Image 1 (tube, rainbow, N blue to C red):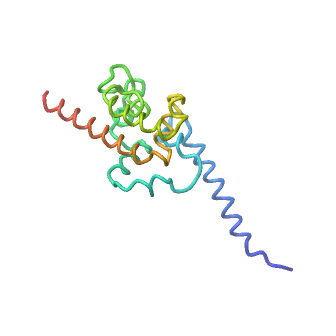
Image 2 (cartoon, rainbow, N blue to C red):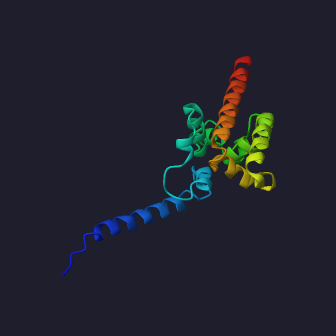
Image 3 (cartoon, one colour):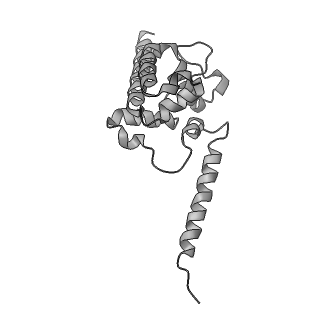
Amino acid sequence: MVKDNSTPLKAFERMKDIFHQQALFDIQREDSKLRTYSLLKTCPGIEPYLREIRNIEERIVLTKLRLSNHQLMIEKGRHLKIDSAFRFCPFCPNTVEDEKHFVMECKMFHSLRSELFRKTAKMISAFSHSCTAQKFITILNNSIISGMAAEYIFKAISLREFLLETHKNRD
């Protein structure tokens, strides 16, 4: 009788696959804190942007936005126990400040975003014709533009913090 030494390895690989499938399913729930991450993380493994973005501060800010580990009202309000429908953007009245709004829609970052969109459209021809949801995923997940996206998010987060701090100091 031939002894099959690969059986434990095969069992481990199968258990790992089941774990990843369940984890990816769990983060796709509507109430998941990782709602943005679930749009971006479709398979296990290290994300290419982690190797490609050399600026550590920009890489950290992009990672935090992807993981919903930030100070946008969608998360800050969760900690303050504010209903998710009332976690409004400090710059856009009656609009929930979530990651998509921050990256794609907030009027405060229009000029920064326009520059990113212009550069992205030059590099990715289909970008201009994509819907907002697909543009959002492209910005946060496409390795061709990851450096530009991280720089945009870093500048927008920095500007947001500056404006909120300045406003707080004037009160």
